[in-house]
Image (cartoon, rainbow, N blue to C red):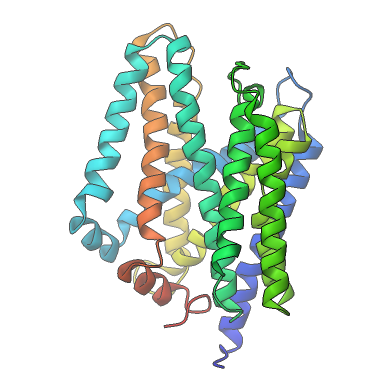
Length: 329
């Protein structure tokens, strides 16, 4: 078994334990700060959600500052340019043309994609933890369990639209089905862990965090308590690993890379946050800006799905070069 040197072990520990602490901390802080249903959140919670939502989406733009990413994107313009631009333009046009009552149905599709994207990241985090700790690849059952609990959690959210501000009860019948599927997914995941025998505690903690990620949706009734923790934990996980890619020593990396990433995330996040509140505007151009905000968020889903897909050669080579303590060469 090959073992990394002391510096790489420290970096590996920073990512592993940082991800676990940020995720648990996100859920704990949000539950403590969450207001009652129908009341506004405080400034601290608003600031945290800005960090975990708008800033984390905007941070994806930093990848385009890297020459190797730009070269990879030029060879695949569909995923990295055409589709993202079409999503932004298309959602802007639809949001401007439809009244809010009709556009609300499009939001169901957006939220379904968004929260499934969250669980795909969780699956990736568990797979990276297994790779970093040389704990063996996730089994098919372990992967299916994480995906299954994510689908169940997403279904539960759509069945409880008040948690998302949609206020429509026509999918309420989905909730008991989602509960049963969530419990079945947990059982499958625990069985998969048991069958694989002894594995490092840090991996087990990361896997269980992925498996149980949507638990607040089933147990809590206040919208911020049930949903904001998911958003904050997801965003902080992403910012940590992107920051660790940015800090890798190379031309334009290190502290300068982190500062550049943070500046892009802050500036882009500020613009996205402004647009995110315009869904109820009577003006078509303002609703178009809200649609563009949704389009940028979906473009982030598409771009990330390509950059972090470790089954493909370029993402694996890129991340192995920048995060050698997580991936074998």
